[in-house]
Length: 280
Image 1 (cartoon, helix red, strand yellow):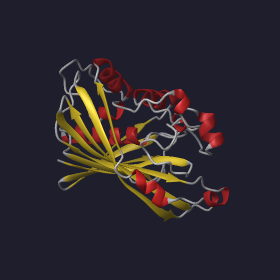
Image 2 (cartoon, helix red, strand yellow):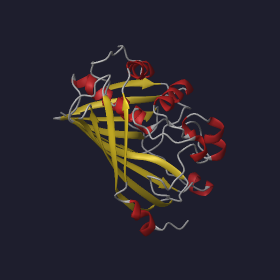
Image 3 (cartoon, helix red, strand yellow):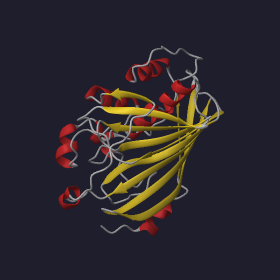
Image 4 (tube, helix red, strand yellow):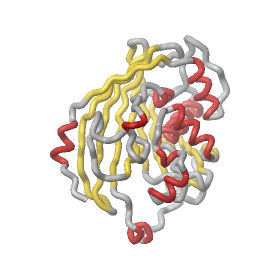
């Protein structure tokens, strides 16, 4: 498929601003979804990475594409490649988000790059987010989105086996069942059907099951870093290497290496799915 990168790069510099008040109800729903205790009230420090569930662009049903995402060509460039995934990102934490605060996200497209991958073209879109809480700087975020073609049956069959991930010094298992994936999609107002519509995920996009959200994996890893260290990190960066599906449990792992913590997810016997590094 031809990709007119010069045309797509015209979207560099696009901006979008959204805001939302963080309610106690959403904070409680967030903790319940991740099976964490606590019922945050107004004025309390909000759970880590709850900003993923705030300020989502609101698109009318008629403006959604067939995959459940907003149709391309608005804020994000109209990349013609059919599969869109969260490739990774990074955060710098400046201050707390508190329950009851007005949270604002100002987003800017900073780069659009075309690369050639093993299975075809890859288009990377980089978005920078500045998140404030009642006007105070809270989080600086870089989001890396990748678009790619659907792999052919020959390419899928020719994939080489990947080395199973090791267990971390700390490790726990997560069951990515349908209620967990649906609840996270609902909290983030994410209509991408690969996370909750199994017939679509398997019959249209050809996946073996529902896909575990990248932001949800990042949240689990960041929560683990904070729990193991006893405080939230100052910086946190992550990268997706392979997908996780709802057909098997997966582990969340952490190992301290000097002044940083290495973290990763992996299904049982499978390769690293997402890797992350936290610093304090």
